[in-house]
Image (tube, rainbow, N blue to C red):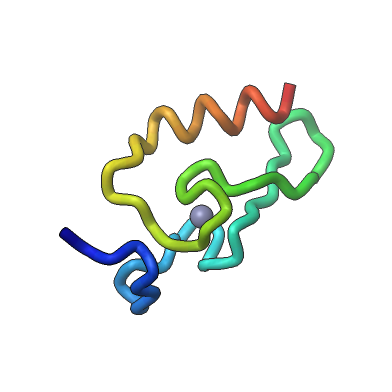
Length: 62
Ligand SMILES: [Zn+2]
């Protein structure tokens, strides 16, 4: 069981670079949203589905 507080480089969320937010420009307007890949923690969650994260991105853009 891995500690979720462990923020080594290998566990940093790449889409948000560990910042917890990503820029969404799906509707032509750039806006910062909570990173759906890590939920804003900045730590990559290997159990999180990238496809589900993409759907969350679209939902927040709409
Ligand atoms: Zn992230």
